[in-house]
Length: 63
Image (cartoon, rainbow, N blue to C red; front, side):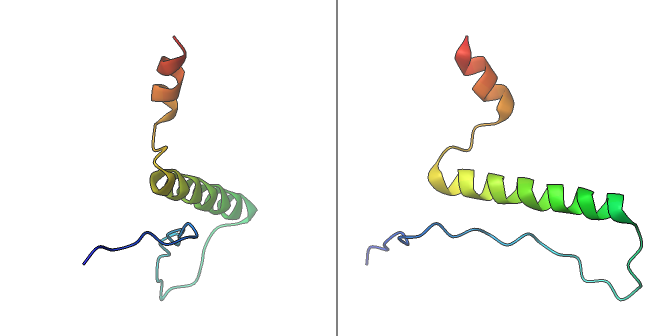
């Protein structure tokens, strides 16, 4: 049986750490976590669409 690709791109959720201890860090840690989430989302979408080239590969393609 042939499987069909889903019509809408499925974004893999950012893996969250389960912690039993109190969260430490401040605004900077929150910004860093948000940036990591965004990057993970970009990579996930790129791998789904087939454009999983790294920034270095993109740069080398120009030349």
